[in-house]
Image 1 (cartoon, rainbow, N blue to C red):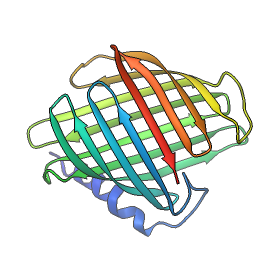
Image 2 (cartoon, rainbow, N blue to C red):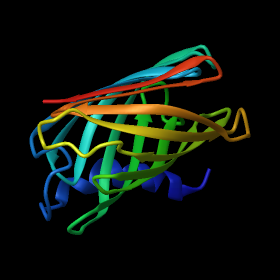
Image 3 (cartoon, rainbow, N blue to C red):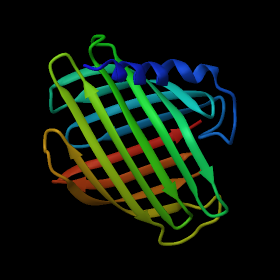
Length: 203
């Protein structure tokens, strides 16, 4: 396994500690986030804390149904780039983590998004390395807001998600909906008769 993969994880977990604040927070400096995700392969519970807007550090519990395994990840996410215009915002992140199972078990990836009040798009690619095998997953999201609400309103998006991983080795495309209000967000969809759910709360 190339050393650059280890360097990505180390940079995500350690390098952000030396950065200053340059723009508005992702959530806010000193804020916390709890996320729950579940799909046909696994479920995860993830808590992270953001000392500054550019990065977060947290812990994740994973129940991997496909590989019949349970473990914790120590994770970090770092904001590499952000661009704001009068009508849109673009973000680009790197993410990484170390598993409590062994030093040979770690994850790394990239994420990006672009959105206006009406349109939303996002991409991500994550690779999980273990001593015996690698697992990677790519995801694309596209969405449109059926109405434009005010700041405190309930906002909704009609979305399409496409996923591909090293097990299926084929793109699965399916619809889902996203709702958020204030610090709460939920995404609901179905893929091959299995629920795909993402819940998030910031505090």
